[in-house]
Image 1: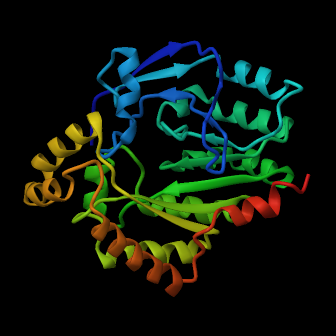
Image 2: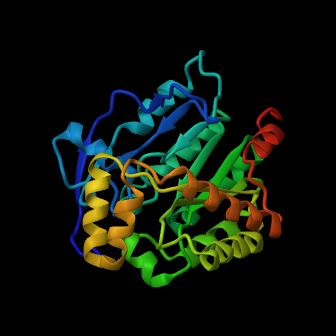
Image 3: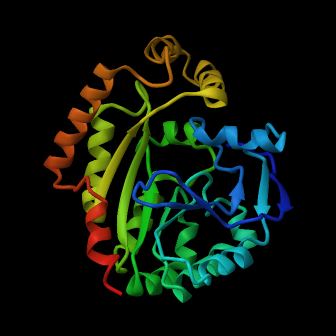
Length: 292
């Protein structure tokens, strides 16, 4: 585990919501922190510190201290159409500093006030602190709570996600939120070749997903570009030297080749069918988003 204490750097944002070009199925993104203490070795968001002239993504955490005020101004605008907001798409909103700043409860209160639907994805069980608010929100609009879980091998998980809670705690969190009216999802992203792509690991994830009664499961392959590529291969060379050459050969470009991905998704689809887990997160949206 990375024992270095993070530095929190407070800043003011000009806007809370970031409009996305593609609806997938959301058109808006909200990130209350820049940088993430989870320090996942495959993190695709390392690039986001470049505009800050900062290279320490895992330890220099920027906090948008005025984001609640900015969000209310945007949600109260007469032109706001109550579209889905994706919360934490770049950095986890429930990383350790949220335990200190407590911004998410205030954001959830605004979503309740303005009946705004949202998607929250996290690797932390700190979200359980806000159970009552998410439960209330789930009763008047669409809210999705998803956990990103990559492996059930505890030793590998601690190496590739050194400051995130255990996979079992994340599954326990999903089971708890299943008691609300929220839709519950499992994101198996990224699947790392030769580390987390074994049939045994994927089946364990599907079995536990079935036990948690998730509404859907989405897999995703590993992509390596820019700073992430350099950082990831440096980590692999140190922690899994026997996998280094194979991964380098597979990742001549940003993604694994078509044959690998086709075989992987074929196996995953078979397992989803075996455990009767849906691959569609849009179903819950269609059921709940237009009810109010």
